[in-house]
Length: 277
Image (cartoon, rainbow, N blue to C red; front, side, top):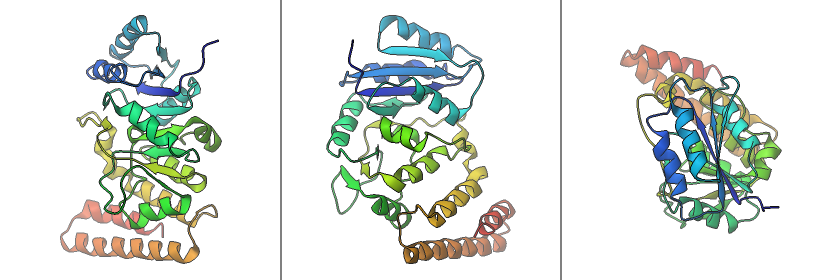
């Protein structure tokens, strides 16, 4: 029996015929070779699935599936993970790229910290420490809420221990914010490894759902408050109270400014956010 690969690279796709060839090739160009590439197409209406199937013919590490029905972003990420055999899960979206040295670096840095449940890269320089370094659950929450912020990273910037992924139950179906939610849940119980930039490349284009991010700010705010108030939050109550009060004052100040400048759309969003406190 062949040993399972160390890394399962997971690529979900939907109408990405313009980009998927480059995305797949970026994985196949990796210096690190102990991986499988699992591609799950979500019933694309273009040639995305057919393009992916061609790669399956030339590299045995590539495995291509198509869903019986459209699942949507995070459910499809979970579907891709269900096929995985590797110790680590590495998402590379069908319109993004990973550098040739990316997989090797991610694995090398994760292996330095055997207790970590996941890692996040694409982070700006930390002025006090050189990457990689590990944060405990409480340190991760503090780093996110009083430091540079880490829970805003997309799945492309993550590498996840499959055991940890399974323990927390994978991604929840929360439109736009499933990753934000996942990092909170993982960091309730696992340390996280922080890593530098230059590992993956995130493509920006007009077809991304991220372009409608503004419509979901109250979703993020609700998740933030929920996790800070949760009994599983690794922070002490005084620290949590300080963060919530600071966030509320920030929203109130912005509301006043939006009112003065007659920015009614932003004002309406701010009111919805404030009501959650």
